[in-house]
Image 1: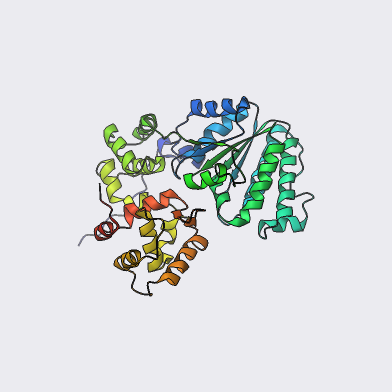
Image 2: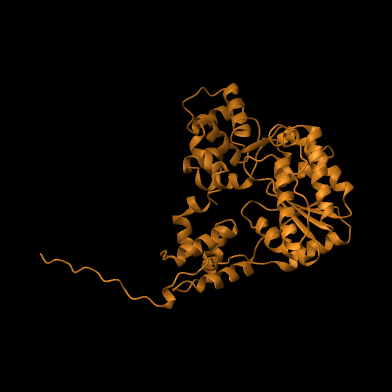
Length: 400
């Protein structure tokens, strides 16, 4: 047996060099919709509407739209922009708002040469405690300080409140939302709020219910879905990095299979760029579970930690049934869905509903007594990936 010769280090050229900054190597997938952003901003300039609430399911691109289109365009129109993320895990609404304003203060101090003091200055320890222990008066005081700081910027403010439907979850948020509404009304001459949400039901409870703290504070609009223009744009971007030609009709079909979610299509294109075999639709079918993962904060990230009863309840909710969980028919249905380790009765079902609402934060109860997914994307994930054919038949769902 001959001894293999040791390999020599190959010669390299300028083309083989690493890019100095990793960010320059990233593929820029964002598809700008400047005309749409300008339409929303111009409509607020007229003063005809107090605010705009944009609805779209999660992963439909609404956060990228407000941060990469609305925000820079608003700043070019002489507005200051404050972004608040109410979806951030383990952060209460007061803390989320505080963090958003504080980041804006730091940025405008640096970019505009302002000398605004940090929100940290003069905030009592007791007030900071409201981030964990909710207190009505302290939350109102905190919001007053935040809006006072916004006034000091000296420009009109476009306030981007992302995933605002979180404010409709839990009675502990009611006082904060009322205080927020009060400050928005007091500062309506300079603060222009744009809300986004991924739950149409919860947005309706915030803005349309006569008992809601934000009643008529904004008009709810469906954010237009990305269309063929987006597909053409990302195909053009991907083709520059891909050796084989990518078929447009295949890309459109894959985009639809993924529920018109931009991230699903760009993830498929990355697979193709990295040598994935087959067309985009076949790549989607072979990688459906990972592509449709909602994320660690959603049902998909907690599914393995849920009980048999929890999973059965979610499957029933995904089928469209939102009440009547204690009827003989539903008890039989729960058994057919594989619950065998606990007695199927009203107390155990009630415990499961409470667990799904409070621990897993995946469902909520409406004022009309029905139960719904907090995020409709979670429902789609259960329907797409967690129902066997037998379970589909039991629930009255067809593949079509």
